[in-house]
Length: 596
Ligand code: AGP
Image 1 (cartoon, rainbow, N blue to C red):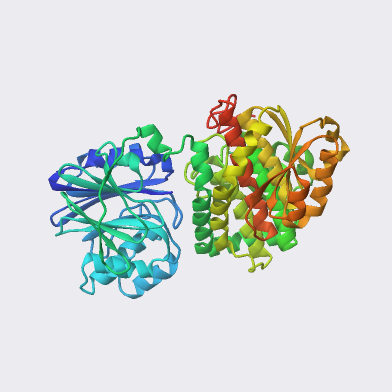
Image 2: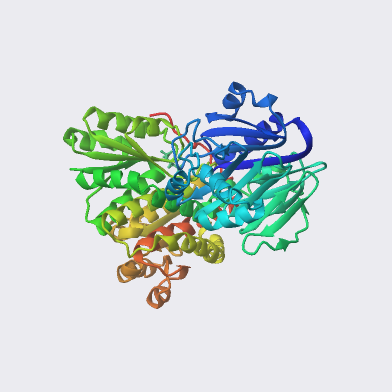
């Protein structure tokens, strides 16, 4: 979740402080490296490194940078480790052009080879550099910037936005394809950024770019062109009146809702990244395939992802994976653990003490340890042999949402690849997620008045949806403070059924293959006066038996399991808000649990 910012002024001036401030305002997106470049006349001043904005800016004295144009970038590593050479912005071969990007160029590896074969100087592994060379390729053929960007657009696959400028020019150029990009128009300057928080302190007049648009920025005007045919696009600026706090939430009332809605996009970025990083994935898959015992270890929501992963490894690849709550790893399994065993430690924060304790225990017995985490540079990522990044950017809300779905998708994609299940079209998954979030919201909201008066609830699932029932129940108790138990649907009759009274609500999450079994459970609840609410794909029998139904779009059973958690996230969110609680910061809880 990188961030870019660029500014064009009328004359050479001190740009360092503006670039530092803009970079700081993009840090909420998550990053591991920072850089700044200024352009004046015939020179480019480029300073960058891995580290925090404050530290890198101080070490390289960004504050003294001057120029007529400036670019800053915060990098969240995808292609290439966090390092000075991979930090952005990047120069072209001769050092007379500089640019930076946000997003993922999925054919980066192939492009770098082409650029080198064409004699260009490729300095890093980073895909931001590929954006610069893709433009350089056509500028070198004598094209102007607009034409060169049009051609580069055809070469660069993936979702991205980039900004670029050259010496002996007075403009910056930028393009949007999939990643956010907003133009700011001030007095005697224009600017461009991935997001509003870095623009609003400078100006409130903005133009939001759409995909496939190129913008040219002069100090006193901007011009938009279509990348397809080069035609001019007319768009008037709008004036932003919202407060900075609400802008950071992107117009959503809470970070949780924003993060729920970000899930399709971060899923797309994760899948692009995994597709572009096949060497690393093959390495992990080989370890999984050869593991004597495979343990998936986490806490809370991350444990639920482990549970889902275990079902996917079994169903898609015929591989047994043992899901373990981290503190239970030592008493239940450690005595039997040894070399030849593999542990995948899963954590959003990468700092959960319970998980780090289990890691230490596993390592003490010679177990191979890999990790899956969202926070770059976290202890877990540093202490494991290899790390699978979740590519979600910062997750601010305490209840995990987008990190959970990307954990689940990572396991799902690994299991599918291990099992040779190329029939699962992962490219369709982000759109299915977006469709689910959009279509279920009305039916979810309609259920809130019915369910919210109850302080005891159950969410039941089976097979592929069992982990989602547990996760839905955790979300609900975390932010509504109601007691909610997630359970295997078939277990309900072994005890909890006695809790059912008139109107007692029970949610049943079902995959398309488990409908008959779930209908049995529904009727056991209904005939005792309970209210059965089904979450699943459209099915006449299910709809006829349940009292209420939340329909998710049709897909295969594997994808359906992931989709079914989305209405549960929304339900907990709407219930918490209706109860007057702040879902982002539930009482007694912390985002990162560094204690035993
Ligand atoms: C999730 O909504 C919770 N905040 C919590 O259960 C969390 O998943 C758990 O504390 C583990 O955190 P981690 O993923 O950072 O290790």
